[in-house]
Image 1 (cartoon, rainbow, N blue to C red):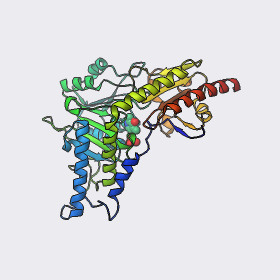
Image 2 (cartoon, protein in one colour):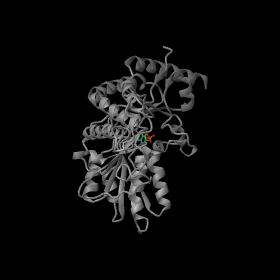
Image 3 (cartoon, rainbow, N blue to C red):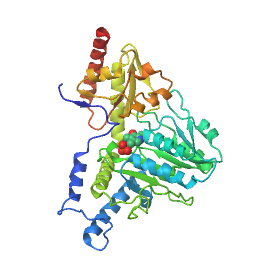
Image 4 (tube, rainbow, N blue to C red):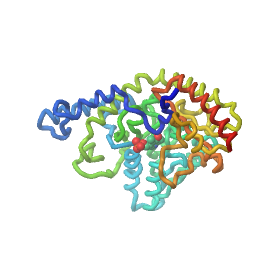
Amino acid sequence: MKKLIYLDYASTTPVDQQVLKEMKNYFTIKGTFGNPSSSLHPFGINAKNAIENARINISNIIGSKKEEIIFTSSATESINLAIKGIAFNYLNFKNKNIITSLMEHQAVLETCNFIKRLGIKIIYIKNSHIGKINVNTLEKKITNGTILVSIMHINNEIGIINDINQIGYICKKKNIFFHVDATQSVGKYLFNLKNMNIDLLSFSAHKFYGPKGIGVLYIKNNKKKINLLPLIHGGGQENGLRSGTLAIHQIIGMSTALKISNSIIKQEKKRITFLKKKLWNGIKNIPGIYLNGNFKNSSPYIINIGFKNIFNKILILEMKNIAISTSSACNSNKYHLSYVLKSLGLNDKLIQSSIRISFGKFTTEKEIDYTVEKFNLIINKIRKKY
Ligand SMILES: *Cc1c(COP(=O)(O)O)cnc(C)c1O
């Protein structure tokens, strides 16, 4: 097998052919290209209708109301809007804090770092050795000054699943807003936000076969009003929360991608669960192998493993035509050692020996068989050589 094998779906996914086909209707003079804010002529009205239909489709899938969906450029932007949007209400207050964890995506951590400089305290909940947030610990950390809890659903490096129902329940009880970074779960996990105590939820289309550069922030609209301050000012689109002409082709792409992903969610979960097990069973007896996180309480789409005394970058280079990653796809120096693995208690040496493998729609059993074979071969080769 000479072909390239992609096992890095947690960093991004290819756009689905059907999605691309649909998107192509929203660019040119022959398609629906109008500015959805141009409400006085059919070009604008048609664009607006297409966007509102996409909004309805997305909200039906995640169990929200259509007016609770705000389109942004990415999960990163959604996360920034959620956290800063709440925090900016409290800049002149004393003793306010935001609770989050050490395993969040950089979009959450760096936003919190910024907020910290503005005088709001950030409280980090320590996770367990498998990477899960203990709900009781979290509850105990909540103070009178807590303005927001932000905890991710599924971790992008190790796939661990947090109990967001339970955390939501606590936040509701204590009357505190709850934001969830659901970027690794939307499109792979059935959601019904109606029955969940989540106030804000972020996700990105390119993690479920939609285009890059488009995301959603869900903002619960109920009796307890969420006053978010916008980050981007201008024409007042998206209820004034996110100005700028809506990217119609992107929104259609995201909506179509979510529809397709959701229609195969159950069979895909079953298929990928089987493939993850097959991979693990095929390599778990390699001497010195270890699993980061835990198998049972994790997403079938992600596995994080290491091989003692093997430098991950060497392993990845040796794997050649198989695309895997060291941890998250991040190029900043600050994060060159995975802080997620560090939070599990791993020492630097084990962190530098760890890799992430993530599966997706185009992953086949053949590819997994090949990958298993290659791991066995390469680990042996490296151990002999060094
Ligand atoms: C990919 C990812 C993000 C960032 O998404 P962008 O579209 O790159 O902004 C945030 N959180 C998690 C958990 C992710 O996996």
